[in-house]
Image 1 (cartoon, one colour):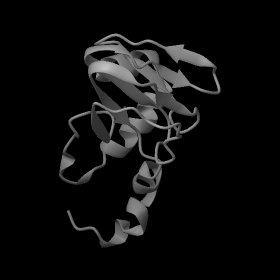
Image 2 (cartoon, rainbow, N blue to C red; image 1 turned 30 degrees about the vertical axis):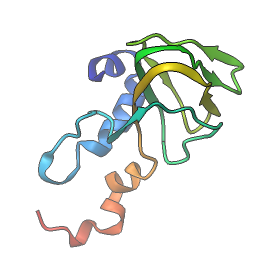
Image 3 (spheres, rainbow, N blue to C red; image 1 turned 180 degrees about the horizontal axis):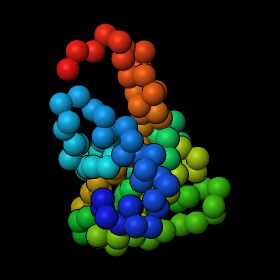
Length: 132
């Protein structure tokens, strides 16, 4: 995922990784360059925006299911993703949800963090108090 985002979305990649590159102890999160990820197990969601995200999120579904497409409301798009497909979109800006499904449906969702730039700028106001 790291190489894919870096190649095709270099501006978003730089924005996201700026935060994780300055985390304490020089540790990179499992979903690098994203600061976090969610593992969804058998989830159908209500329509929502991810207000805590700052740029893009990545959705990778897996399992064996029927139906359960992902709706991107403002774009008026219904995506019937297959296992291993990759969907990248601005989850803070586009209302989205997935429809009911039959079978086993899971997904990994890697997301950005809107408070990341504050951490990059001055460690959320703690810059002068951090000893490392």
